[in-house]
Image (cartoon, rainbow, N blue to C red; front, side, top):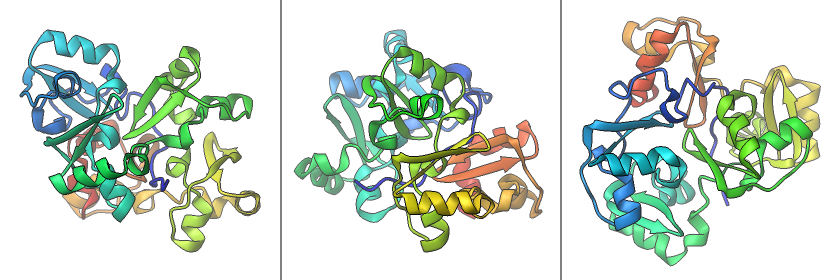
Length: 297
């Protein structure tokens, strides 16, 4: 399976783990055009949610028609949020593009919600679900906490899942899951597990493997083979920031003020394969409220 380039350095309060987000629900993008994910998963129905019944998760606001659906969602958000944060897994695998799906073209497969932009992509998924269903699975399902803490490759259990920046991370138990939720920055791999050496040298997204990993400056890096791991260790400065957007300058300042202003690592956000830095929390929150505005310019 082709994995996508994504995600790494950001604390839980930065870009959505439950209700811990810095930006309020009213400030974050509304997921699924306000449609209720619980209603789709449980009843296969498109139901409009209410603004006053909302929860934050993974950088988005989800709305619900009643307190019952909100309670179900809050108990286990990863069970209900759509794969890839609502983007189409078929478009990602076949075209390498993030294309938003629609609730009107939804499918529940093995208990998980998938959205597609049109019936064509939904039909394509149905013909070969094995090709697309795990397009959002980080590290091939291996536990990132076990890699960092014990240097061991341990398979995660779908019962212990966390969605972070659209990717689904699995853990063998509640302890590892809680450690990840407390501090994702310590465990999410650079480029969502893709090889930074391959990105720099070949301009290609090549998935890394848990067997070839290293931790550098507090970040986890994966590589497809020992060769790339050795190249990284010989010259980490060349590769470590392969996912850094705009050379570390603030995307909000670039778009709104037409200025290059250096960001800071403590105000970082991962978004669709790039790590964005901001000079302060206010500008970071402005980005979170409308990331598409600042990543398409």
